[in-house]
Structures are given as C-alpha cells and as structure tokens.
Image (cartoon, rainbow, N blue to C red; front, side, top):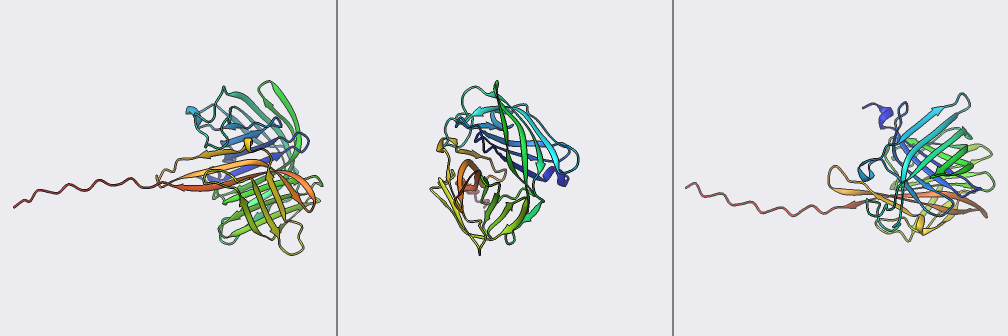
Amino acid sequence: MNDSIRACHDLVFMCADTGAVVAVTYRGDERPVLERAVVFPASGRALWVDPTLGGGSPTALAVRSRGSGGRYGLRLSARAVPVAAPDRPIDDETATGPSVPVCIDIAFEQASRHLMLESGTEPGERVALARGTGSVAVGSVIHRVEGSAWSADGPGAPADCRARAVFQDGSALFVTAAASGPAAALVHNSRIRAVTVHDFAVQGAGSERLGRTVSWAAGGSSPAGAAAEIRDPEQRVTALRKDPSGRGLPVWSCAPFVFVRSGITGLGLVERRTHLTVAAPATEPALELPDPF
C-alpha cells in the first residue's frame, strides 16, 4: 500500500454566519476514499456519514485542485443519518430515522502557508488555514456557506484531543494535545506560526464521550490561551471502531464549541480520541491428558 493511500486528511469547515460546521476525513490523494463525515447544521442536529454503517452507503467524494494559489474544491454526495442519542456511541440503533441525502460542495483557497505541527516525539501534522465558500444541502434545503477551514494532513496517528477554531477578528487557532504535551498553531493576518500552550484540560468527559468544556493557557506573551464550551450537548457525536487485534475499542467523539480567546469569541470543533480496553475472555482450563502408563 503506497503512502498516498495511508495518508489521512482532515478538513474542518466553520461558517460564522450560519453556525454550520462540517468535518470530513478521507484517505488518499488521487482517488480519495471517505472515512467519515459529520455535518452540524445551524438547526442544532447532527448528521453522520459513515460508509461502514448499516452495511455501507454509496458515497461520491472528489477533492480536486483548481489551479494555482492553493485553490481546490471538495464535493461529497452521500446519504446521512441523524444522530438521535448523543450520549451513546453511534451504531445502527443510535443513528435512527430515515437517511437523508447530503451534498457538500465547497471551493477553498489557501489562507496561510502550511506548518508542521509537532509535539515531542509524536508524529507531526501539516496544518494550514483556508477560506471556503459554497453550499451544504441537507435533503431539499440548500444552505449557502462561507467561512474558514483548518486542514490537517498526517500519517493517521491521532492525538488525544484536537481543537480547531476561527474567531470574529479573522484569526484562527489549531491546538493538538497528546501524551507528549500540547502544540498549537495561530493564524493572524494570514501569517501562521507555532505557539506554546500548556495546561490543556477537558472537563466533564466520560470514557466514551467528549467533555463540556476545554481550556488551555498560552506560553509567554502569545495570545493563544483560550477556553471553550460545547455549543449544544445534543450535537455531541461519539463513534466506536472495532480493533482488529481485539484488545480494545477506539472511541472518537466530536462536537461544535464556542470559543473565547483574549475576549474575542469564535466557533470551532473539538474532537477527542480514547481507547476502551476490552477484558480478555477467560480461558477454559486445559483438559488433563490420560496417563499413558
């Protein structure tokens, strides 16, 4: 398997005007394969797109370059299911109701250069800010959207928690927290730079869900310290994935958050990854062999 297939791409788009948040994860470059997508419309519900849920749903995903200047377009056409039980992991029961067609069609233009964001010995992510405009259609309702997006490319080794936000003054912040410590990128006036943060904390989190508040402090004189609160607990999405080794269950959860940084409010998405340990089944005692003598 080549590197382009293994490469993991995350794109989180936030529309400040409508409050819509869209998160898309895919693998590969020339022929991208959708891993999952979550759409948080301004109406307050959450829509989940997962090709593996319910036996698989046909999806069409295209990510194409649109010339020079870092312009590219993303188009996703799929069927999504509403998440009816935000405090339970997504499965065929918690993702209930009839599926609805969802179409995401957004054109992006790079708004900052790429920055390799590393923390200690953790694998780095290449992050960048982009500006996007287009539409998000849910059923027969089409929403025009315009806002900013954080893109992250990496080897697919996720951090424990990531937070992405854009603020009313046009600035943006990307924070990732792993066992080796947090790291952050700050964009202001289209200039991106790595900043130091510490005391990253998630409050009210359970073993299978995201907490209600997230905060961290800035290092030195950097204006990167921020606090965030979940916008609507009903929009919290949690998904389980089976581990082929059978030793545990990877858990991924996310939700839109309202951020405050240096008195400036913003909108963003927080995601958290944990790993539930599954106890090994008790082994049957070996039957005694008959005495050959």
